[in-house]
Image (cartoon, rainbow, N blue to C red):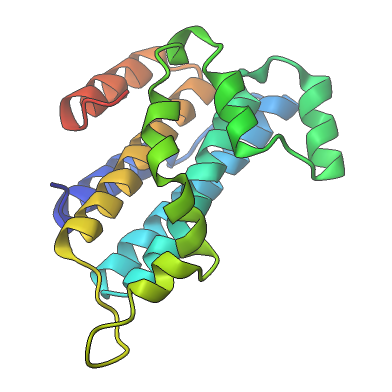
Length: 196
């Protein structure tokens, strides 16, 4: 079960990787770094929201963190600058499901765990982000209208946020060409989550 303290430790590690980031002056790498930096900003905001017990907003931002992190990874690993530049210029990126399929064709992602991880929570992430039935149900108690997120649900959301914080860090390390750091983070993910 992930705690706020564990989430903060992941955040500190990610901030260390992002600090003073020198990126190749190539479009794809710079675009990936920008997306990963945005994903980190979402992650930092989620931590603050959890700390302040603003769970509805933390849950709403979780989907943005995940999608931006996955999009940053796709841009980095796409290896087709024309496709990436067209996506940026037209502001039309592949759908999340397409990004996952494309990533899972690559050597480091062939295990299919991204699909397995995100498939069961896709509907909930959408609902929490867009004020749907999951978000509404989390604010209805038998006697009042107030936030009523279970401890288990909050811990699961923190775990997912932390996992994608680390996923972002792996890709940041790859953007700057540091496979040693990327491998170390992957080992940490496997130890902490047993997912990637």
